[in-house]
Image (cartoon, rainbow, N blue to C red):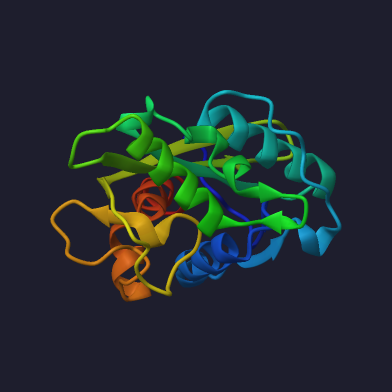
Length: 202
């Protein structure tokens, strides 16, 4: 496993929520973080059917374009009652002509579960795959997961994406209600990140 030895890293994302989370997680390692947007990069087309495949596309695109190591995150929610959907298409379910509308996407998930009379609990998992890619083409991939269920109505003002309808197993607050520090400590991204840190930063 290759260790990270520089002090600059590009986060291959335009998602402000992801940038905040990843920057906070990287802060202890003295790494200067910039975003794909800071470098004027477009978002590459995500053509793979797996989280790992799409994470690799984004990380290698940013590393090649900037000449710096790049870290990407591909994440989404998989809902058992929908056969694992929306999965890698989580963000696509929120797309509208004027930008992403996650309340609409959450309602779409719930309506589909209602339409197929999915049993309770409506089990789901948040999945995150991190890819750290270097300009020479090498990469390391780490996967994280947290299980729980989809609940309705939406609850909480924190977080982003599908957080307000995701209740982690054993908890009474959705990710949208939870104190951000508590969410970070147990999230799918944190799970993947602890593996990344152990593999490449420690």
